[in-house]
Amino acid sequence: MGAVDKKSLSKPTWLKIRPQFDEVYREVKDLVSEMGLHTVCQEAACPNVGECYSARTATFIILGDTCTRSCRFCDVKKGSPAGFDFDEPTRVAEACEKLNMRFAVITSVTRDDLPDGGAAIFAETTRSIKSMIPSCGVELLIPDLTGNIDALEIILDSGPDVLAHNIETVPRIYSRVRPGADYDRTLNILKSTADLRNDIIVKSGIMVGLGETRDEVLEVIENAAHHSCQIMTIGQYLRPSKWHLPVEKYYTPEEFKILKEEGETLGMKYIEAGPLVRSSYMAHRQLALYRNKIG
Image 1: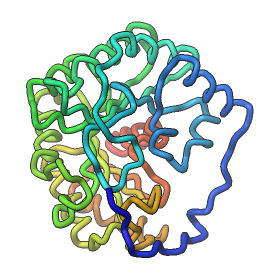
Image 2 (image 1 turned 180 degrees about the vertical axis):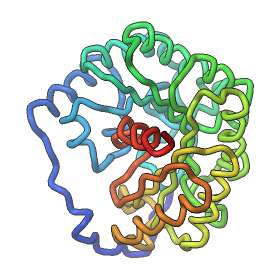
Image 3 (image 1 turned 45 degrees about the vertical axis):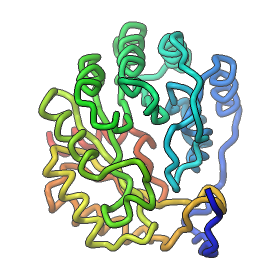
Image 4 (image 1 turned 135 degrees about the vertical axis):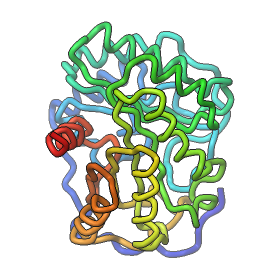
């Protein structure tokens, strides 16, 4: 991946947060390490890692730490994965139990090398958590499975409470931001989820600041709503390194508020929008606010 020459914009004050690295943060970090697990909090250099770990929450990455795709916004390691760990679902469930989790978020690297894209491991992880902690809610943030609906059905049959699949950006710049992904395929994953299991909440997310226009963002929200998405997150893209795409624009908190208000008028049931919002950030709170809104 070649360096992008364009100079990064200066980060605004509302994105300069004070990290929280207290005793609970270290406890969670050590537990994840001791159990040989990965979290998006660390692998993707999430700015909320201190806050989430300190609140005893984490988003676990399954299927290893190496992604088969080369998205230009993501800091997760890219390459050729070496198999996968059959014991990983059990260890994730054990970690959730030790953290006294009431809501677990599970995601993965993209595994185009596997026939089912890792669907069986997603399903087993859900079943392990539900078996070990029956009261724990489960949200799965899945890759596009190369459009394999049979694989999607395997995941849905394991009974997650929320199925999330992120759109990430607008169609015009999809090939630049997400090489290997397809906008229509992503929308089809959302719609197929609702068609197959109407008891599972469908969720997606988009980043802003990559050169999209406001109207393009609103069009994505409207498209997602028409494809049965119920919850949408909108957050600011932050450049992980000089090797990644530059930030074209920093949206203000007021602009995020407007996107939320306008997006919800287009049919999206609930939108969580803000500079530091991420799909998995305080996902249990997003779900609670959605349920409160729809009654």
